Length: 154
Image 1 (cartoon, one colour):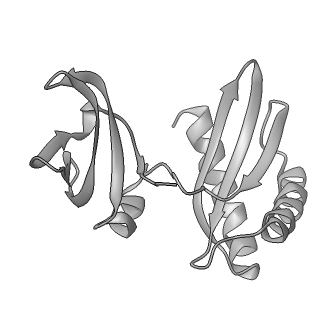
Image 2: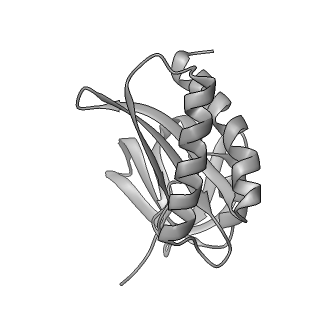
């Protein structure tokens, strides 16, 4: 298992009881390097939304547990936040919760001279994601998808 994935998995294990205690669920955990700095990000969620106090409570407890376990060799910045309105749908559980909702899909390479599609998430499986656009129902191979996230209008 790559180092980043191992750190994400171990962090999620530490985070689970903390999230349960605080009445939130884990949306995602990522360990990424940006601009020469490592970031450990924990995204938490709740049906009625999370607030700054939720993030602060979880962050303090998670930080203490990470210090106790001390399994991350690099210096990093810990961030705990909501996944936001335009949340990225990375995992099957994210897609499952988003069935019937509007999504934006960005592709690595153009299809039909377009790299972005918007529509209603109709279905998914291990190989593809199906959205209903204004024109048609479109099945997109998962390896072609650079990003899929919830669409939102203001």
